[in-house]
Length: 576
Image 1 (cartoon, rainbow, N blue to C red):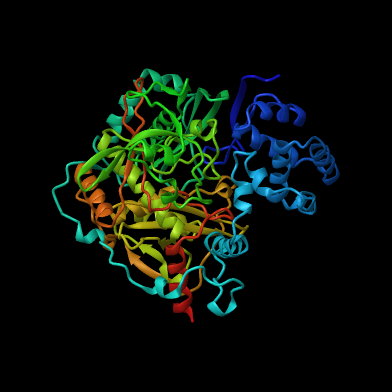
Image 2 (tube, one colour):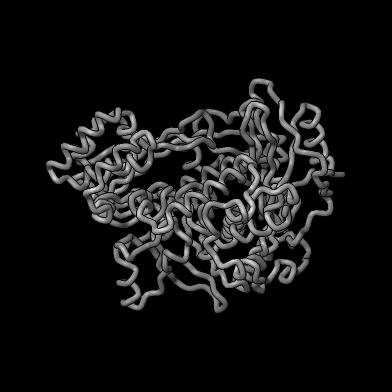
């Protein structure tokens, strides 16, 4: 009988920006997995590993398992088997095997969201629209007109047309003399060279790093590196008692070697800091430790605590007052900062994705709003900008009228664009800037072999935002000397790099003040979790902003978003 499990984290492909999977260090049979889950029913890593094993079965083999579980009235096993049937069309015909079982009961026997998602009243409408939007966003397919939609827009059209009063960043902007370092892809409190030297002297960083940096030749960025590192965490929370180890690689990019190295190293810092060790419901290794409280939202409210309602996060499925683990965070409002309880799942990386509780979103863990900095203010600013970037990406759709080519007098940008254009790489940009006015762009090019490479960037300074998007661009085909891309149709507008909007003061602290003020004036209250670890002593922040989108990807689990439909309406009405 397995009592404590050891997992390993592995990348599905070979570079640091590929998908991460978590599997047991040794292969475990389906029988062993189910025995383990009956004792540890909320081990999400094992649940997902079971799905990975079940999908290898034939329809007849899964059918036999379903029948055996029915005879034993084994609801946990049946819940797992039903999950695989609704997640993979391979087993579509077996869904009828569950017609005589109450799906709401099955949903209570798995921590994953899939069955709860399948019970959504508007599931068909939701799947239709998310498929339409995903094909537009990721494949650049045209959006159907209002006359050619199978399901109606799930909002009153008048409410989408109404213009709510929004405070724009230009109304908050206050120019000042810059005191920080503009690296081209960020505004930093300390010069990148100093950051690199300080990090490489840190004993913890020295223990984490593996081998030398790998120069990346498939990146648009003038300087790009992958830096491999190793980690190990142990978590004992409730019935879940597990160890996870692995080797990861972080991508660093920039306009100088020092900037790219600092970028990669600071990525390692933020990831390491968000990977939390827990024992007896208490974190280990932070400058200020976290004590987990397991409770329902209503329980904490009744005790008079200030608590974040998870449903303010536009989750994929509604939170229904189930028991969760909570931690104390810092919320900013017009009166200053205050303590607030938030679900621990929003704070940590991977660790809180496998506490002894249900998932409240499908990914189980997210890096959105996670940032390190030379100062706590720098970390907060970087985290907020990333959160705004992901929000902008989530609510924006592809339309040619927001695409543009870039012209630049700046020698660095001009040389980058010219060099890749001569190789046959047609780089375009899509303006993702939302109603808040924070410059946000997606850089992209379309491969002749299929697929689209993308990079994103948001910043108060439009030039830095577009530089970040440009440097995020990578392409595997470049490794083999294939630079063939497809140009868009004629008539794409041209924007001048030097004329991009700039609302940055040039000072980290002032920029943070402006950004927080903008959010507050629009009714958004940023929440911070200080993840600074004792051994590193380098500031790391996780931020969430209730009301903005936390999960940037569009898939069938995504929930409706009014701003997304407003953008859809704008595009189809303009094209009609």
